[in-house]
Length: 61
Image (cartoon, rainbow, N blue to C red; front, side):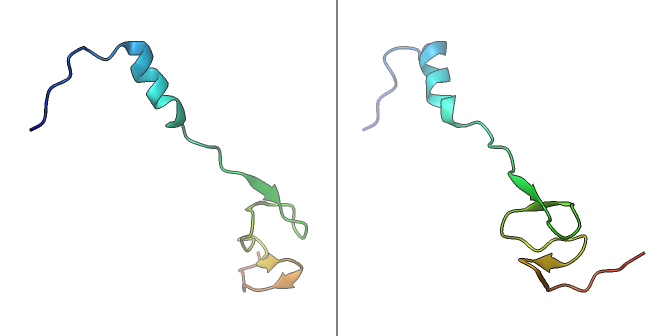
């Protein structure tokens, strides 16, 4: 049998519980080949290179 809470949860306790619910920023680095912003451990969408090797064919203007 479940019971209702005896006391209202205070704003302080509620907010302390939510302290870890924030969003973490996306960490990105620069591509050593073209200088574009790239997610770590991902192929560069601009030039198609990953760790010095061409892996994707991209449209070049």
